[in-house]
Length: 393
Ligand SMILES: *Cc1c(COP(=O)(O)O)cnc(C)c1O
Image 1 (cartoon, rainbow, N blue to C red):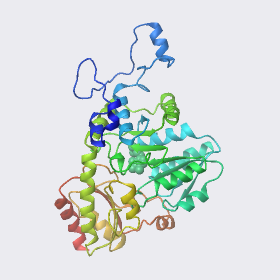
Image 2: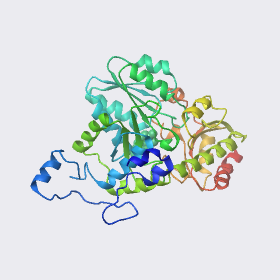
Image 3: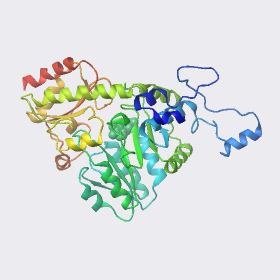
C-alpha cells in the first residue's frame, strides 16, 4: 500500500485497506468464516507457528477485520491497528498488554464512566492503581507520576464540558518519566485530531461512536506502533475480545464518510453553540469552537475541528434542564453520541449520576447542565426543538 502515503484523509478513508480478491469485487467483501483452510499439512504448520503470514482463525485473523484495521491505522497515521469487540475491550486489552501488578496509571478525572470502573474496580483487583488529575493541569499530571507509573490516559476534549489537554506537552511529560501516553480519540476521530502525530503512543477508539456514525454496531480499536500493538494483538488473540467481521464491515463503510460527516457535525455544532450562547435562557455554553472557551486557542492549534458535543447550562437548575429535555420531540433522549441523530441528556442524573454532589461540583457538572451531541438533521429543526423548552423558561 505504498501509494497511500501521499493520500489525504478523505482518500484513505475510502481506499485504504482493501485488497481486491480474485473475484474482482469493487466493494469491500465480508468474510463470515470462523476458520481458513490450507493446501497442505506443512502450510498449516507454518501458518499456525506464525512463520508464514496468512489467515488462521477469525479470533485473530480475518480479512474483513484487517481491512478496517488497515484503514483506521492509515487515518490515524499509526503503524498498526488492532480491532476489538467494543471501546471498553480496547481499553481493557491495552491495560492487559502493557501493565502488570504494581504498575500505576495516571488518568484525567473526566473520563467515560465505564473507563473509571474498569480502572478502579477491575484493574484495581489485580494490583494496578489509578490516580486521577485535572485534565488541563500539566503540573498535576507530572506531580501524580511515580516510578511505578507506566501509563498516562486522557480523553480530550472531555465530555461534556469540552476541556482539553495539550497532547504534545503531555506526551513529553510521559516520555520523560518512561510512561506511555494513550489518548481516547472517540470525540474527534482522526478527521479532527491526530494524537500520534502530536506524540501520543496509542490512540483508543470506541468505533461505536463517530467511526460508524449511524449507531449500528459496537466495536473498538487501538492504533499505534508495531511493538506495543504486537502485545495487544497477543491479548486479543488469546483472551478473545475480537471484532466480528460483520461489524468490521459496517465500520469500514462508516469510515468512508468520516471526513464529510465530521465536517458537517462541526458546522452544525458551532452554529447551534452560537445560537444557544445568545439565548436568554442559557447561562453558559461549553464548546471549544466558541471564542468564549478558555482553551479556544489550544483547540484551534491541536485540532482540525471542534467536534459536536456541547455542554449547555440553562436557567432554573435541574427543573429547567429537565423541562428543556422533556419539551423536545425530535431530539433523542439518550446517553449515546456519535450518531447522525442528535441526542440530548442530563449528565447530573444519568452519566454522572453515581457521583456525590461534591464530586459533581468538582467536575463542573451542574444540575442545570444539558449535553447535546449534535447530529445531522436540519439545523433549523434542531433549533426549533430546543427553542420550545428554552423559550418557556
Ligand atoms: C463510548 C465510549 C467508550 C466505550 O466504548 P464502547 O464501544 O461503548 O465500549 C470509551 N470512551 C469514550 C470516550 C466513549 O464515549
